[in-house]
Length: 521
Image 1 (spheres, one colour):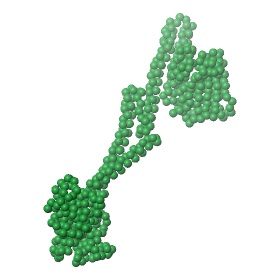
Image 2 (tube, helix red, strand yellow):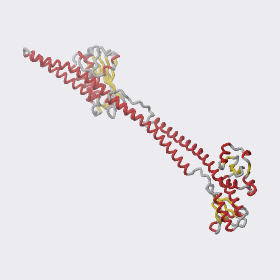
Image 3 (cartoon, one colour):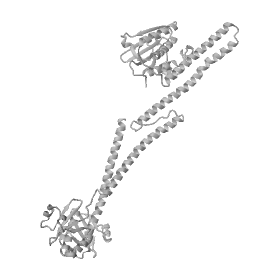
Image 4 (cartoon, helix red, strand yellow):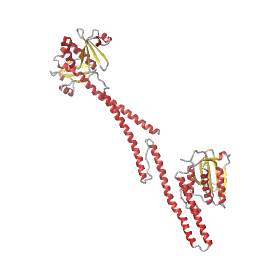
């Protein structure tokens, strides 16, 4: 995995994470703001409707004016929005935030608006309700008290229980905090409870509904749905991108199958299938090159085979009309030469095809480069009369003269070069051998006409021929130098041509690493 691809995925995951957090926070804050407002109005609604239903709430519950800011005013005296006034007309309890706490409003039967200000809405609602309950229970007794408690509990949405045995009492610390006070509020922030003592000493337990919970199950369900949705969207987008790149690869494969050998996959380094695209393009280039080589070989072979086959056909016809044993022997020798030429051509073609379409299984072994040079020079010296072939090998101990190679193929490559040089030389060929710690180099120079610089690369093309002295008349089929280059390629080296500074003709060079684990990939 490339660093660029990793960083791209990491940034995208980080962006998805930040997006999830921001979306959840925005939804949590926005929805809870509305939920809290609704809760405030619903929690205060029983108390406010109780006060609004009383003809004289300020007189009956006079202590609530100082404790909770109880007031009764006309709607025109209140700074309420038209929406709030309309809601009041519909009989709803309206809550609004104040500088400290909440202010609640309810429309009384006489058209006035009863208002209540609570600094801590949940605890103050419980406290105000408990004080109202105490006032009414203190003014009744016996069975009437139980009936009043039941009615007030339903009206104020409270659970009222008279404490009749010690098991119903709260902890001693709560009883101690009650002291001379008429009530004490205890419990946690989510669920408050009120211990109420009446004037006659009777104890009652008052339990209001639960406080507002910002982490209620609807919110948690909504956050889970949002989180799952965002993650699903991010996963879908990531898979969609991968699918898009895979479709590109599939499209190029279809185009290649249809014959568009030049089709390639366009993909940058940061894409999830960049390595696949690179391997696919490399494979496509290799296939394209093999197809082109195959086409060239079919075309060239058909052309190269025509000449010897035509000569053989002509020779056969001449054999039939030979008038003397000498003429017959001459035609048979010509046919035998043509057959030999065909055999050599087929050998060259098979060798080139084997090297071009994947190469032979090289068995590299440590061999002496100077020994192979001397062997090739000796063999060519016997068959190239009139050409002096010189050998110049750098002085080096025996061990450094060794290199990893396939001796048979290096011998074949050097034989092609020395044979070509001797065929085109005016009379002199020099074979130089140099080895250093890393590379082996063999240069073959001749004093012939040389090769124009513009054709230095073209001479290594299969079946290529130049329009100078290196033509068909000098022999060869245009495969020798292609074979030389492929042999060096599979050794991890290269073959190239230049000009000989000493002799003035062509100089062909073979360079490959001395130590290798195997053939070129």
